[in-house]
View 1 (tube, rainbow, N blue to C red):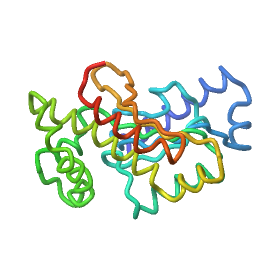
View 2 (view 1 turned 120 degrees about the vertical axis):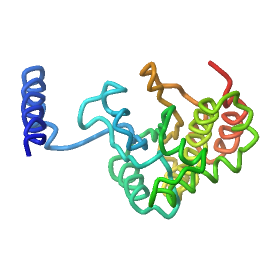
View 3 (view 1 turned 120 degrees about the horizontal axis):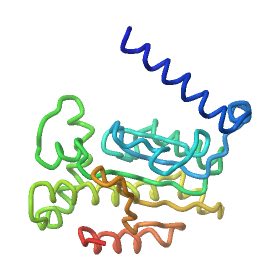
Length: 217
């Protein structure tokens, strides 16, 4: 339990800092949440969603899983997506992966990590679909990073193809879907250029992102 005691101490210190900086913050936060963004990211502990975009609690609705995968049968992810869009009226869905992702690395190299192998099969499907792009990278590490990019692009398209997003677009609700990737080595985000804000934009955005994949910006 000693290891956990420090977490409670950290929490109290954090709450004091927030309160000193902005008195009444938690009272206002408890009354409602009105985030503008839904973040679908990796569960990796090195990618703290709120911190890397400089947002406070209440400003970012978050869903995370291994390798930031969006599957049409995953009711967990779909429920977050539906609540964010239909109830919270968020305006932007951001699928964010990161370079050096352990799940993507395992999928790229066919390494077994246990039960998660079944989940990572979705990432291997991305690899198989774009094998030429992955193989075109000039090192093992570059191939992993290329697959990290491709995975984000494909998962962003999966978001666009959900009934939740498609229904929102059909009723002309303002909503955009984006694909970003985060660099562990420099702490910077990169837009992969697959943003879409309507049904008719999805195919072109996907094709453009694939054509640019792996080209240094």
